[in-house]
Length: 272
Length: 102
Image (tube, rainbow over all chains, first blue to last red; front, side, top):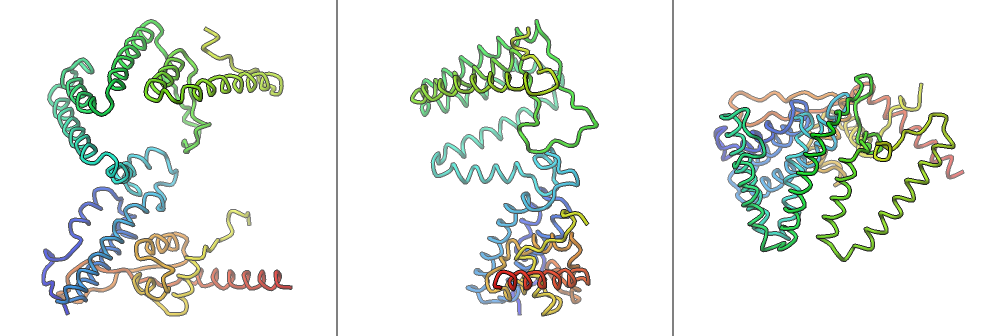
């Protein structure tokens, strides 16, 4: 019945190792291993018929990758479903890995080898940083050449593609970093502490606390500047958004000050 | 019983339960083959896992004969609760259809 005589010839061994790295035990046992078991069984049943064997392998591999894409969204990640377990945990699958692969597949037709080059360079930088950090704990942080040198190389690599936009981003980023650093030194801010009595955070942007301090204002203004530099054609849309957003914010502030029993929180930007 | 505690049975889960109740214990690939294209091999185990967590089906690994190679498959069978839920669901659907037609 079969041309396969040992475990070393069974298809799906590498996929099983990969799955063990990115899925938790529950997802492995209930979904991933059954899919690979079907693949192996069908290949066995195909015997020496190459066409049927190839067809079984294709069906099995397709099913495996479909499962890889589906599991993170379909298997409950944890009893609390915390964002951290979805993004970083092995419970339900490492969503970041899956999304990274999906993103690469999506941008490859547009950017071609550039996408792979950036990923390779990014991986090398990550490995280098990790090795450096292991050997030199307590280093000089962002001032260290091993941090800024690869970034500079990456900027140089993409300069032919994005031209002056890259230079503008570098200059504005450096200026913004200096200003933020000086402000933070003079006005140290307090970290947002979430009370432990609150339920786990869900994916709900409206519930994320945002500090309306000068740092937030600079971030927003910086984002607008970057967009305007990169996409000057949308300048009127951006300016219109600022005006309508400001009008909406004022309206909401006034409505809350007259329709709620709690006094509205003062905007810290204006209050300081 | 609150509304959130009423067992629900989406179409794919109902189809799987239907097949398991009518055909007896089945492997995942057998369910795919018998579904006439409604179940896909890539996602049938996700649905089966959900049914298992609801307590509507149970599964166990197949017993591999001595000398067999490869990963063991899982065989699925309905639980008494799953059979009751399927019967109740079919009854509700039938009543609803009659109600709409009358």
